[in-house]
Length: 124
Figure 1 (cartoon, helix red, strand yellow):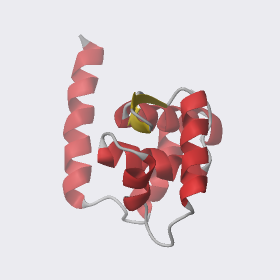
Figure 2 (tube, one colour):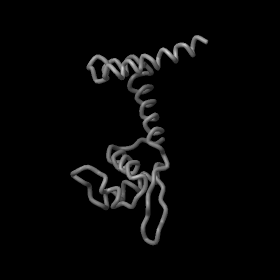
Figure 3 (cartoon, helix red, strand yellow):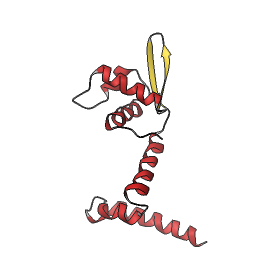
Figure 4 (cartoon, rainbow, N blue to C red):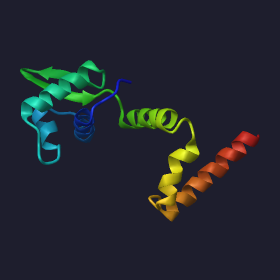
């Protein structure tokens, strides 16, 4: 997957939220202060060239939809951060979240259960 700028990610999130829509529909889903219509149209065209978005034409209107799913993009971002920034160390990646209490006790317990299940699978 090709790297996206913050503006491209914001527009892609709006497309995921809308599921499909014209430029004006996507613009409506962006937070304030909203960029110009032409800016959003340009960003969508870039996303289309990068393979994240496609469109269907109805008369003179293009209706855009994502062709990369949110979960796939999120997985890509995590893999990039894990291998790049954190050097492949899961401990380095999650320890700041745990130490700063950015993960709730409930989430920690769920992670513990998930890890215990994976450990059992490894040992088989």
